[in-house]
Figure (tube, rainbow, N blue to C red):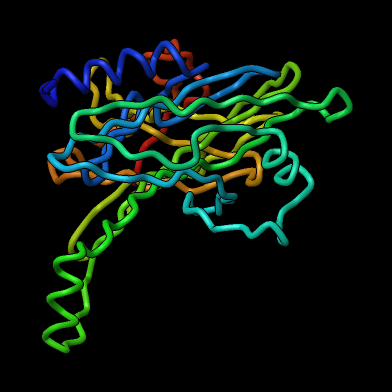
Length: 276
């Protein structure tokens, strides 16, 4: 049996090779490990997402796709097919994947194959769905069911159902994107403090990266995984701060929005400001 550390190394390596782009290598929830956590398919192409059961019991997972829209605060709202825009419907129609349900033994990984074939007449742009991986609760064993029937009791089982959702992007054509940062300000309440930013996106696709704050050469804060999707022109971002970090915010602070280092670390936007 493979050790959990061996499984993680296998999944990370395979995920990095199989997917068109991995901006965050792996995500775990319950006994499920998924890699990568973002997939980008440029034009018609293929990719893979690797699932691994890192628990000590066999588990079944259901794979599906859904639509979600970003809101100005960065949260997401579910979208039904009836509410879907033409772009969202096109994303659902062009993505193919298999299998749709798998059972994994402890320590077993398996790849989910993805493919996308944008139609020639489809306008250039970014198309996105969110792929979900959800645990299927185990059925009640025949022995337990018989025991309940014999006792004549009504039993209620509360079984947590966990899952992971990752975005899958299909990009057609040569797409550009940019962003700006404005109005950095301190906020908070009696229990927590934060730095709040207003961010705006431009171009034909989403942007994704990390935000870091510097005073001179010293890094004060860093937050990864900040995205702005095409359905919003801008969003607010809150960066939690400790008392020590707040104390270092005196004087001009340089705030940078960059691609993740594993994606090249290119500067997307920056601002130098006195934070109040």
